Image (cartoon, rainbow, N blue to C red; front, top):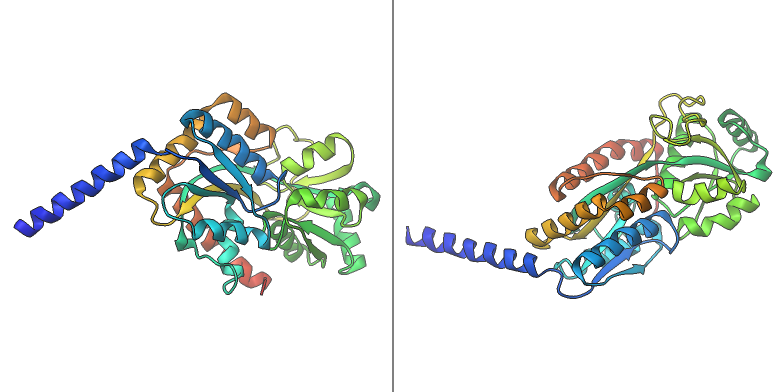
Length: 322
């Protein structure tokens, strides 16, 4: 009985310490790692959310862009950081989840090394081509890709990034062969996409919308299950002839595993507050994103569901990055 009482008292002290830590958090600047170059969708949404968090807490949330290897370099930095909540990462949920699966030897982290703070937004992407390609429909693109058999190229933010996997799924479902050209971030793809050097992309709204407004590229379709709000004139890829094709992006904020639960809860609360903030919501909506609210535990479940969904797809596509 005495041992049980001591254990209970010890656990109560831990809970009190965690609660005190959460109440004080953050008491110093927070390092926000974006595992891609500046100017891309993950970078822009991280800046919008971090701006709110800094204003709400009085502490700086400083963005650090560490691009490369499909997001695994920056994510590894966070996985190896002290588990105190002062280093976090923003990433596409799919790249975050599949990095270790596609790079088992070199990813540098496992999913178990990170705890989700929240999956906070989602969007469909645009299937776009350069003006110089002369393609106006998805069927035209498929015919052109089949005729050129591997010579037509598509861009991505790196292996296992959302634009890469969206294109690989398209290739598998249409039987076309296109060359993959990987960049450190989506913003780096713009010059070659516009010029026609790498003329195809499965682009986020963040990348596509400014270029579409200026008529610098052509949108053939959107990748979601339903037509994109505000762009209903565009068919989905499935409606355009690739039956069953659906590819939607979600985005995650995560911290090192073993970060105290109370700190993760505090960060999640700040994230939920940011999603309720009119200025932050407007910033995300301008990026073509729909805010999502959930707990850290629910977000971890979403990560596992994403992994289970894509494990078989990765095997069928025979995607190998090392």
